[in-house]
Image 1 (cartoon, rainbow, N blue to C red):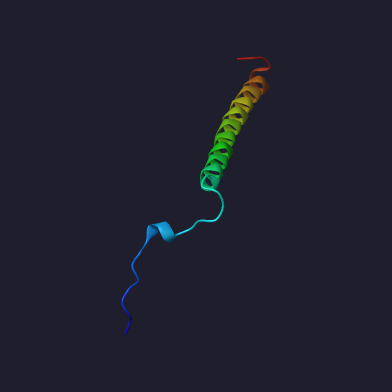
Image 2 (tube, rainbow, N blue to C red; image 1 turned 30 degrees about the horizontal axis):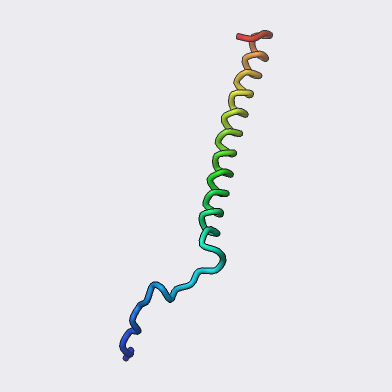
Length: 60
């Protein structure tokens, strides 16, 4: 049998690090994701242009 629950006090919960440490991690992940999307789009456009040049022996 369990005893009575202790009252929950949200102010007593401490997180490690400064208050902005989680926001900085989120921002870093967002910047990394944004870099991946831009890099993929530029690579895809480059491949399309290269394929057109290869097929037509000239630009479009």
